[in-house]
Image (cartoon, rainbow over all chains, first blue to last red; front, side, top):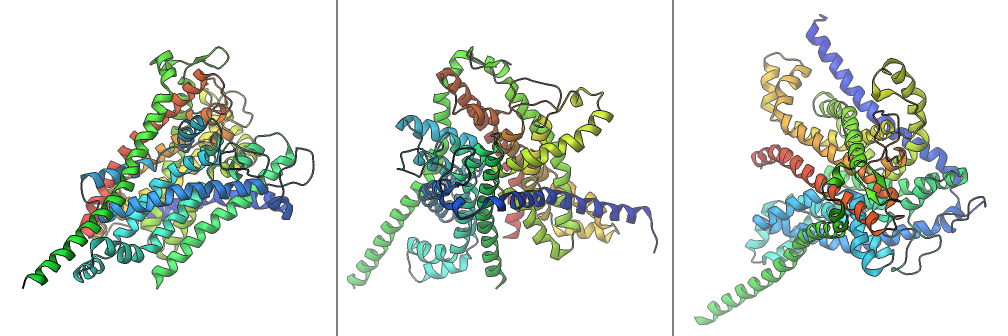
Length: 278
Length: 319
């Protein structure tokens, strides 16, 4: 085999670019490894069901933060999913005009909103108005991040529905709105659900929007107009203290959160891949 | 003879109104996106009024940030954001390009999907968990293994002088690099994949190797889109909050050295907003948030235009 310079360069560059991939995967593996190693010892039944204890006291858990995360993400989804999905339907089915293209462009641009800015919006828009940190303010802040993502994924997945199916339905005399509701949306359903679940996974881990909207709370949730504890904020609060037993709690919380998010992510990919494979 | 005609019209009229209602309903939700964008701007603009009136343009150039004396200048944070983001790009761009090239051109087919899925999984990890890892794993690692050689061999540069305690601009930049690699590499990869096959076939037919094909025929074609991907990564880096807040050290001083603690626009907000008591302090932080929003929207628009130009032309051709 002849080893000329050009072949050498080809081999070297293949190797170097492959090395880039390997090096980029190292942090991910390191993160997963440390979260599992440090998180596992902290997790037991109490960790998921109990309230936090003051520093120095053994036991206690993040039960209220887990509850709070579900509540705040639930509020965000109640606001974000209808707006996101229906505006996505508009953009895909009725959006071939200047208004539609502009909205689509704005949704795209809004996906780049810094999360801390979304939190600030929740603060000025809801917290200042009701004069109290609240679960609702947290939900609104998260929905700001959620809406553009859901809009774009809905639009993209509905645009994949073949035109022939729509045309067949319209040719049968079915009005366009019924065609959209019963034919287009139900054909593109799995794409919409995928997008919605990925958006939920994304906002479940957000901390910055919640710091000054839902704030935090050492007790169980008592009303949507009250400050509420969430996992990301609790992890952050524990992480920046100097106490080792709170660090352990932070790692435990990180493991619970990462499991939740990775299950959503990997589960969704698995379901959609199987579908496209068939 | 009249009847069928009438009923025909009746059906068509009822169809028409159902369509109208449906389009109006979904159209209203689409309008909500614009309302949201408008409200986002308006809220932050109005609430930062006090700070804008007090400091004017001097807010951007003032380097003192003193909540006690109520003097606020955002320069240290603008500096911190720019330096940490550029540092992140410096590290992330070569890696992202390498990843994009490998996964779209050089890798064996069956490795492409799983590898790109794993790289994108990094983007799914919550920022606060990356920050936690940054505090306990990355910062000590950089302190023990990266700082000694840097200060020994490059210590003559002001960038690498002074002591390093863990939280620093360098740690912030490195962690940002990890966080923008997924988006920069996946957008670059998408852009590279839109390069028409005949570009590659032409080069291969002339006897070019795989790498030469990529270098001569593929990359020049994808250049503007890759630039868009880099800008998109830059936008991510600027807005990234939690992980940076946890490792950058929160110092209000502008320092030449990458080893010293610093602060970014996003991290100063995360750190001080819930503790700020005076209305001028709150308003100044909101003005920083407003600047952050405006900058990241401009960056996003620029990036979308660059990436879209490429993807849309090709998408049109494909359809």
